[in-house]
Length: 259
Length: 259
Image 1 (tube, rainbow over the protein chains, first blue to last red):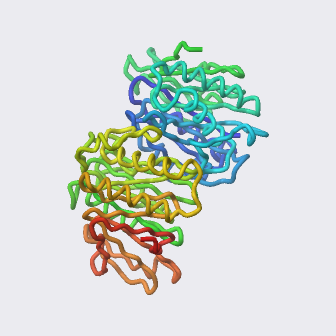
Image 2: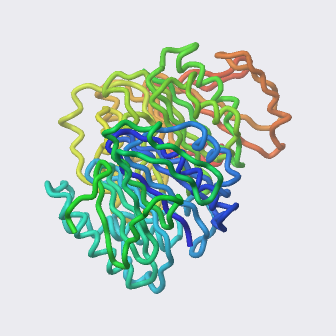
């Protein structure tokens, strides 16, 4: 199993605080030592930092913790390998381009008997994980359903993807984060929760390491920031726990009403 | 215009020495202050570090200079914007997946009257540079020509791409680096050169900053390392200058005989 972390915000926001908690689970408070990755969207562009070594020891993870990259959408993952060896090509998040947008995906869980279902053609996996193959299959179904030009109504696309995610969940555990750089979709199989922070902001304390943040000092009154994780990252705050099969779409930090 | 740097080697090799020289051209010895990027292949996987700020000032470039990532193929670029604004989505290298491999591309030069020619469908640009659009057009032509399954003979594919590069060069200046993670292709419009280092190794001094390296201390007798750049990076070494329209293919540091 692995851990997921994602963020959707209405202003470029740094995720140092949450990532610091997550990174501890990569070898200190958690057993997820088989690599980690984080994708930041900045405008239409995105950049991904990855390492096949534990996040608690990684030089690059240290950079991310000390050098705040401000982003409106972040997708992050720390890995405990089950399917696929420990290597850079098997490290999440995975990215593919469709409709002139970078789509970024990360998965927590494990699938069985999936090879027959996930026939892919135009989107092919580079590594050998169930996760990346499921991503390629989802992207391929989206391309087949909607064609090479993006439809106007993206809610319709994410609703279609939620239907695909139901099919994938039938093969095992499938907690998923997916973003096209504008919307952030989260699909729950058994472990996903979120919190939306807005004024009046309070303080929060990480569960995994001894760090406290006063969001009031880090934000402006109009900021809306949603953080999604497989397990709550903070004490003293109420996280919304998603139910199996439930999915949510966030844009600029706000929950969208499409499901 | 911009600067390109690439490497092909038969053993995982760090590019800190060459990148140190290149990064100086991003604001110190050169005017290329509009972002920079570098892609490292490690096995089938790849990771790209990018920044829209000058490489000579970038925190992430500092990490690359101080933390040697060992790789068999590297593609790097520092940008002086002509077409397209300064932003992350316009920062090279660009990557797309085809045939279960990550293809990475960087371009030096400028094209004119290209919008009509570069009709794309399956591979679409995310940013608004001539460079990324040309890359998408090349990938699309390869997909149309060879289909969704990789042909056995990759030399044939790169020869086809060289023909496409001739067409792009007719629209302006097109110095290009392209890799699928196994081969590294370089196409010259007016500025490209390379050097292949092998035993007996000697010393070299960077042109752009006061750094000397003794390759003999950094290598083993079987290492073969080819470095490609828009302009020679070192004194005291003989770089091969490519002619307009000339292209080369390197695998594991060795020049391939396919053109």
